[in-house]
Length: 385
Length: 105
Image 1 (cartoon, chains in turn yellow, brown):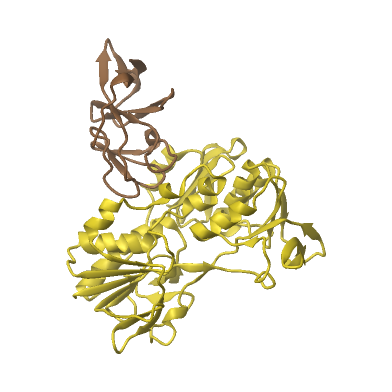
Image 2: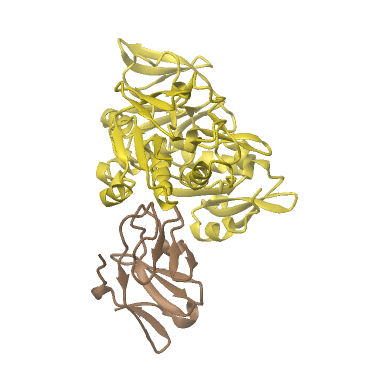
C-alpha cells in the first residue's frame, strides 16, 4: 500500500494515524476531517469546557510535534462525500478525488435531533467544539434549561448547568434509565444524583414538541400535556453513525459500517473504527459510542488493514467513565448480562462504592462511584468474553 | 520537606496521596520510593489511585502512563510530564522534598 486515507480526524482517526506509523506504514497518509479543528478531546465538551474552566487549546489531543512526526496530510474542514470502490477513490467536498490503496473509516456520528427543532434557536445538541461554544453562549444567568435524555451526555450537561447556577429539568423517556446496563438498584443510584443536586427529573416522559415565539424556543411540550418553560434546550438522545457518504459504495451498512470481528469491512482494504464501526461478535454485531473504544480499535484495525487479512480480533475493555455532580462514575466489562450484582465496597448511600457484576459466577463487569483505586484493581480481574 | 508516612505504612505496590498546595503521590515500586505530582497532566484524576506496574503508574481515568523516575508520559492522552520530587527516608519515615521538584524537558 502506498496511500491510506483516514476519513475522520477525531480520536479514532488520530489513533489510526498513530498506529499506522507505529506499525511501520511509511507511505502517504491523508486525513479527512469535516471539522475545522485539529483533533481534540470531546469528553470535556459537556464538562470543563462547557463550564468555561478549560480553554479550547487544552482540548488538543496531540502536540504539534506528534502531528509533525507522523507526517500525515491533514485536510481539515473537508468532508469525505463518496467512496468510489471501483476506482478506489474518495471524493471530497472540495470536488477533489483522492486515489487510495487503503481506507480507515472513522467518521463517527451525528447527534440525533427531534422533529420540530430544526429551525428553532435555543435548541442544541452536543457533539463538537462548535456545538459547545454555541450552547455556552446561550447559558446566560437565569436561563431555564431543559435537558432531553438522561444518558451520560445529558447528565453531564445537567450537572454543568447546575454548577453554573441554572435551573435544570431533565426529561427522560425511559422510566428506568441505565437499568439494563446497571440493574435497577444501581441505576436509580445514578439517576438520584440529579435529585441530590436540585434537578427537576421527569422520568418515563416523552417529548411531543416545542413551544416557540417566532424562531426562539420557549418551552418543551411533554407527552402528558405538560409544558415546561425553557430558554435553552439540550437534546442528548444519542447519535446516528455517519455513514451517509458510503451509500452506493457497496459496503454493507446497518446502523454503522458492518465489520468482521477484526474491524475489517467486506472490502479487505477498508476498515472501520470508533463510533461508526459495527463489528461482529458471537452475540451479534456491536457498535460502541465511547472514548476508550475509539482508542482501542485502531491498533487491531490497522494491523488487519496492513496485513490484508484479519489476523487480530477486537476485544473491548468496555471502559466508560462519567464525571457528574462532583461524582466520578467508572464502568468496565459487560454489565448488561449479569445475573448477580453485589456492592463489594462502600455504600451507594454515601455515593462512594464499588459493585461487581457476575454471570454464572464469573466476574464480567465492575461499576465504581468515587473509588478509582479499587475499580482499577477489579477491572483487571474481569473475565473477557 | 513534608512528611508522607511511615515506611511501614507504604508496602510494596501501594501509594499514598499527600494533600497540600500541590497534591503529591508517593509510591513504593518494588521497594523504591517515588514522588510525583498527584494530578494527571491530562485531566483531573489522582495518580495515587492509579495502577502501579514496575516503574510506571497508569492514570486511573484514561490509562495514560507516567514514568515514576522522570514523570514523562508514555502514551496519549497525556502529553505533558508531571513533576517528580526527591524522596528521603529517615528513621523509618518517608519525606518528600517539595521545594526542589525536578524540571523535565
